[in-house]
Image 1: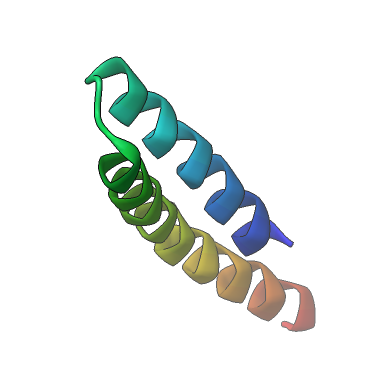
Image 2 (image 1 turned 180 degrees about the horizontal axis):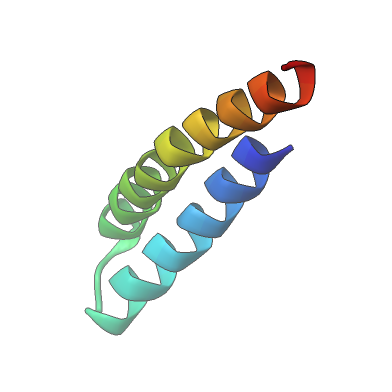
Length: 56
């Protein structure tokens, strides 16, 4: 769940940044994808750590 939320949040943030920079549709998609990936990776590690702490 954390990873999905991070992907959605990252995509929204990336799209907003590209819009402020007056980017076209391709710019907005690239910014959204980049931000989504950048937030998904730490969220994945956080999910793994939380899961291991609960089992521990």
